[in-house]
Length: 100
Image (cartoon, rainbow, N blue to C red; front, side, top):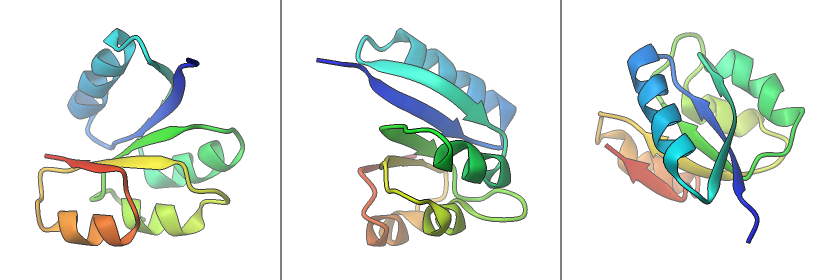
């Protein structure tokens, strides 16, 4: 089985570092890169193929949901948010999972 290529889109440095450590320790995942905001991620994700996005929702300028609407293709998405109010909306975007 090939490893899933992952990216992180998270504006919190602490959360981003934590996710990076988790992904790097998982044998079936490979971290391609991390983005500090959805603006960076928009071009970065559209310019390379990734299998899985760990996505924060509440970010400056554009939200994680707005980012999903701009992608040329739909990778699997795991929403990472402390706000459970985003869970229902996340599944409207056909996300794979929601982590709090």
